[in-house]
Image 1 (cartoon, one colour):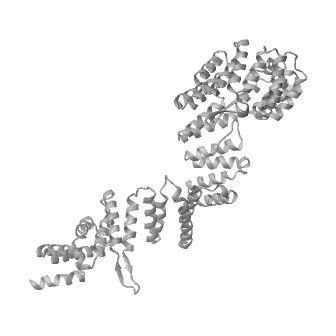
Image 2 (cartoon, helix red, strand yellow):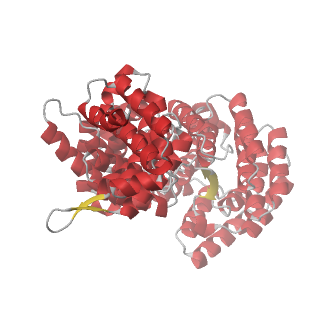
Image 3 (cartoon, one colour):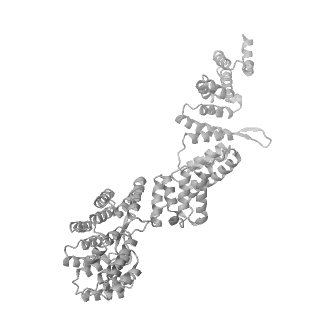
Length: 569
């Protein structure tokens, strides 16, 4: 269920003193990714104080916001104000042409601005070099160029070094050089340049975030976290660091941390784009904060409603919250709106919701819902490698007395690599035990010895995990008894140890004796017969008979069994 974000946040602080004085928050807003607010301020400043610099700043803001067409409008306004040796807006237009993939025309325009500025203006050289990095954009645990088609690290380094030679204390140039060296696969030099930018007064939050990105790409996640946290310490309002931390923790499956940091990111950045809010809800779902997931979706319904994924997420969350009706409603809506995006987990949560429906006073409706639910689980089970849905299916089939289906479900679980727990083993044993009693075409009982053997094997494994569970012993005994004719079962003695243990486990418990009265009588009769037919031990036979009579003094069957012994005396 990966949902990727596209977050733009890099902006060079090289703006005119006039722009900084009249729009003091624009640079920070752009660096935080709050583009709408930033471009509004820059646009307003350009209209109120038109100059080559304010027009360029407005165009640059749109350029960094991923809107080159809007940027071009402002550069074209500013080109009329460009100075002979300082063709700043002309440079902006050359960059736009480069972004538009008209390389021949772009190169001519770039040569022209270099010629007009004599190749000595640090600002012009910087702007060209920075553009050739594609404007690195951190987000989603990566740092990628906003305009990948223009990236040329070698040329970027060349222009930026020329700019740095002419303006050695310009922190923005050092930051851009860090980006260029990173793109040139020289992470060590990139970090050094970022550190230079920090020493020259660059906003430390931006620098630490950049360094964190470098470490992340190098898979040194601990140092990445350390630098992102340094960025937050330097500026608690620096949203990109929160976003990167959220994505990093998501990457390493620390979903609670991911959810916490994306909450802080949204609060600081005021980023209410659909993809961001969807990501936020996703992280809380993965952190098992299901109520928070639902609340986030409901409170942002206007923004999120057009994306069918929200119905899936809300449906899954409601299923986990044990609100099956809402789960069914939302997942069904998702299936209707986006059938091409259906995945096995949709059927899993839908199945769980149907099977979680409570229908007081209507057993038939409950049976219908359970039947629908198990059908959906059957669609999801073969694809779920983490959760044994076959076990849930077997539980339903066992309770519905559909023993063939229960056995088939547990066989499928084993084929898919799931280890049976004690309840699975017990159900597998009991279902095979029940299936051991077959009828032929005329209705005559036919014992399926293989089924009884499978029952005993499964119950034996269940007994190891739960040795004090009386039904397990009882049905091991009965499986070994009913697999044969009564006399054969007594003579081979296979049921003997289990009947003995069963009697020892419940004989002194009145409630259990009453519950298993018929089974106790069977156990006593078996052991009495065994001592009579196999061991021919009269004393042992008499001892079992006395124990049985003590517990069931008025039982006629025991009276009949005792009669021959009395006659012999």
